[in-house]
Image 1 (tube, rainbow, N blue to C red):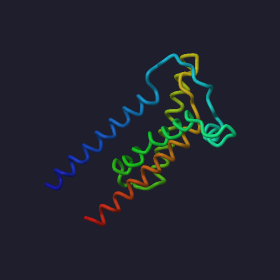
Image 2 (tube, rainbow, N blue to C red; image 1 turned 90 degrees about the vertical axis):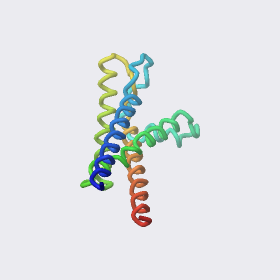
Image 3 (cartoon, rainbow, N blue to C red; image 1 turned 30 degrees about the vertical axis):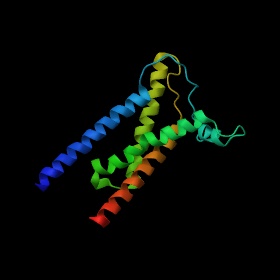
Length: 151
């Protein structure tokens, strides 16, 4: 019975991860629209810094920052479930950095192929995505600790 429960849980986690990856791809790469975005940003904290600029809090920048953080929080919880032998914040950081960089490079490549900036590639997105994954990992860790104490 215990093995049966473990197998079902494993499939549930894998299914959740597949849905998450599909949603992340759709969110970051689709649809292939025609609206030109600003050029790529290779400078760390240029976008994030706009929050603290002389114009004050810019709602669109705030949405971009919160969106990037929230989008990668599930990765922080799913990674240790998918790879329990590597359950550490450092592994989550590495996975998030690689995944986020791959997305930004795909956006850059699509923009180059289309001949205009289809999606803005921004190094700040990578920074914010990693922060989101680490927050997700911290929540996952807190949940596991609480469950172990009560169970």
